[in-house]
Length: 598
Image (cartoon, rainbow, N blue to C red; front, side, top):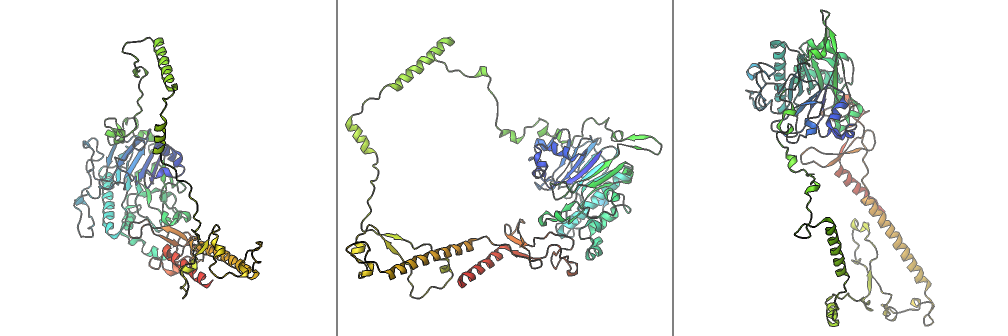
């Protein structure tokens, strides 16, 4: 039997990745993971948004927990083909369905209490008096499989210093829940999920750096986790137990900096077993090649049978009590009102109906008030069609000539083609404005604009020139005029050639100005940078910036405040940063200076 855990970072985003985007149903995705018990974290959905395909993916039994207030945040789920005996939401027994679970349906007779734990005060110095806030984010599911109690977790992340007390208190609540199962109820426990803690320096991409290794255990969450794990604590990290010296065994990567390409990550997803479950442990590993999230799946396999000290063989199926478990517990989604056909989904009210009307109920138009045989009906129909056709063929009555003329007069007469005015000269522009005029100082005495008057039909152009006519302006070939002056002709040709060159130069200048900005080169490697976009809410959201295009890795330059200079590895990304607006502004300055020089 295989147990798999995976932080999927959203149940609706998972099908966007290959190979899951080739599968049409959630059940096909679950079957592709090839596990009997599948535990998801960060479902990022709400109960009203839940579809039948996600909630009831046959043949899996589904159990889900959602945040009480934050929609599209957190959330855990368990999909299993092994029928559990009991199931609960949360760690303290406070989260109850309607109607509440009976004592026979509950997993434990007693649960952790806030008074029994030394909780950490928050930033205001207030110590929680209950677990209501810790249980409000849909972070845990507890299922009883007889042989063991499975706890699927999504532990809080430390987003800020103010969030640290919440994180530590959640871990203390978890520790107390497991302690009561072990010591008070003598049960075996399997804890799976995203614990959001690196267990040792070997589980961190920068753990080998001297500056990080010296202060690694100073973090309160890591110190707690170290004491809770074997050999000091009751829980065994079985994947690390099987691969004690394996480096780079990470399960989470920062996708914003493309950290997965160079395996620059951390190991924060675990499967933890109590000592009594170790005889059943067959093996386990991570699956870094499985894409779909910023995490990768982690799995373990259990033996199908073991041999007891007495020599008796115990089957896993018998230990899980699958012969007695016929129906899943009431927390299963198949019993929810919206999926048990006892309550209509909201989507049913807006769906398109496809109800077909029986042929016998199709209304037939009656041709008369009395019933007519079918043959007579057809003859009547044909008679009516012929009569209507004959009506259409009848010529229309003649319209008097006067009415026709009046009707024609009512129509709007099309505008007759207007003849060009013999004395209205056409104005032609000399071309597009030069781009250099936007950046150069205007010359004194220069005219504001210059216009050439062109009118081939205007005879006054020859008879009334703007200046006194000379022999050089006379048209060749006309017996009444003398030959054209060759000096003016060469000047005119030079003018045309100069205008063509100026136009080409202006076009090139505009193309240079509107060309896309070339990526800047980083200072250390001298290589073209890569552009990124700010997605974090705030004043800079949507802005773009440039970073070194090299991938991140152990010792990459994260900045002087985060990385010692002697620990920087130049093989990876340097600390180059520049806003795209600054790069574009610098490029425009270079264009202006080059055009002014030209």
